Amino acid sequence: MNFDWLINRPIAHRGFWGEGENGEPFCAENSLTAYARAVEKNYNIEIDVHLLPDGNFAVFHDNTLKRVCGEKGKVNALTTEQLKEHHLSGTQDTIPTLREVLDVVDGKVGLLIEMKDYSDKGNMCQKLYDYLKDYKGNYAIQTFNFATKGTLKWWRDHTKDIPLGVLSLKIAAGVLPAIVKNCAVDFIAYDVKGFPSKFVAEQRAKGTKVLSWTVRSQQLCDIARANADNIIFDTYRLPKE
Image (cartoon, rainbow, N blue to C red):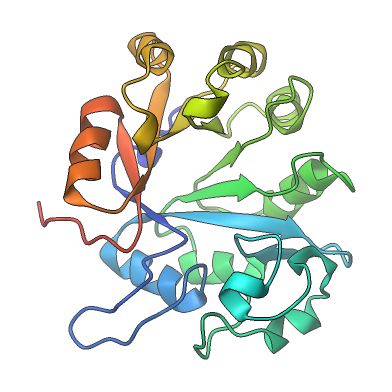
């Protein structure tokens, strides 16, 4: 499996969002505007997906609408049509579907997809795989699911050419070795504030790739680059190389 695309360019966390450059207005996280700007910058993109009751997928980070939309309710209780009723951070952008995101990205950069349903309720893994099977661009799957027979195990058992990774932070270091071993992950996405990590460093030395999240300052960028193969960043503007 060749997934150099995942480490050969920085990864924009929920798109290239925040204050715009060159007079561009603010744009919200996980918005189509943020994704379009990331594509323009040639950054890979990290996104979050929720399975909706009608079988579609919403791209949105939180479980509830409160922080980003200022409203009550859970995103995974909405229908596809209802997504358009909820604006992101006071902008004109509304909650996008995964199909809309795929159309914007169109294989120009890679997608790092975090699955937000850790229990695989409603056979989310199979449905997401079927949803993506005709997509021609690069994508990888990651999750915080530490169950040894959970999300990552499903993808490992059913696919051979999709990079799989586990999200982790320092507090979960004790259970990280089991999921890395049992699911044969291709990468670890580790909290930059948890470095240095002896276990992550050992896995990296053995060939497991390491991504570091979430970089929001030059100091954190320096830490991430010293301990990982690539960075996941947001609201911080990387120095031009």
